[in-house]
Image 1 (cartoon, rainbow, N blue to C red):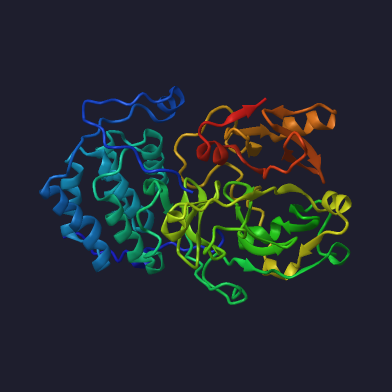
Image 2: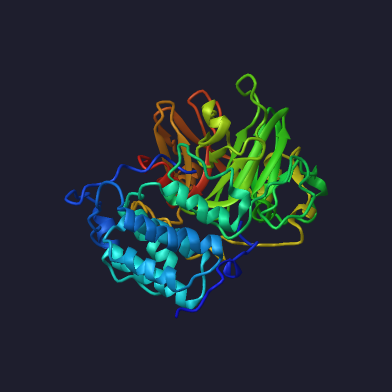
Length: 460
């Protein structure tokens, strides 16, 4: 008889790490084929055929035993192994999405091997036995395998079985739930302005303490900072602090801001959280502990509405019902020496907010590419190439390769795309309109920008 494995005892929690797009496409008929880009086929091979329609009652019963009962009972025994074997014989690749969800939380050689073997059979490909969950999920994303019927209910059961704080997160909305995975940490659900209280999470900072530039002796001139300017007020958010906090709710120049930093995407962004539709309370954004294609999933602690971090759009909950779209402010990625020289009146966050930590994820943990599944990546640039991203007046997203843009601007050349003009500012680059109006640009890794803006133009 198979040994019993306690799934919850194998939850992998790390505090060093700590959106979403649209509904998944409809199921394909078995005889249908999807024409995948050449770079996807070259990397992942041809996708399997996918059946259409409902799942049989017998298969539903097997899924209940393997995926739901195992979580509810915190065990994996002979009944689950038999049910998983039946699922593997079904020939329905859609079910691999649920296997992937369970793989993210389960450990132990026996269980991991059983899940990996079932996924390989259903996908019709012998997958590597290294990084089982990542391998499986990368193939699912790249091949755009549809989700099985009733997917959200089953996924919600699995995820909330391990982290009950996600109960209000996993709801219907304008989200592709297939791509949502666990980032390895718990949800930050502390109330507004209580962020001095410790948490077993990525600890956001509300109303952080700041000091004038001439008092920031702890910062070196070559330290990376994210600079923001609002109504003539300037503030620097050191990367060292943002790699620990990942989310700041602040006020600058008389405006309320929410500032997420996704270490995995190399992207610090800033959204105005005031001047909202009538009757809308200021959203207080927090890290959920979830990811979507290696991008942090943020949510509002007041309404539990989930936001697309890259787009600033509410995707679920009351704020989605109001179709809330946050306006983006520019974030300039620079170094402290250049920023304070250009803006000597700037304030900067105090060193204590780093909580004694000094991470450099970019040059350490993330140096060799995304560490979470992202599927295929637009091959026009290397995955970790820095770009400056912005959206034109016509709604067209465009990415500017930062390295080439910086050289061109230093040489006095004009960089323009539709209404957008790039300019140097305080050691970094920002986008402005033809009349000089700020357009809310930010820096990010190419893989992140291109997957959340799949139709993006690329300069040059």
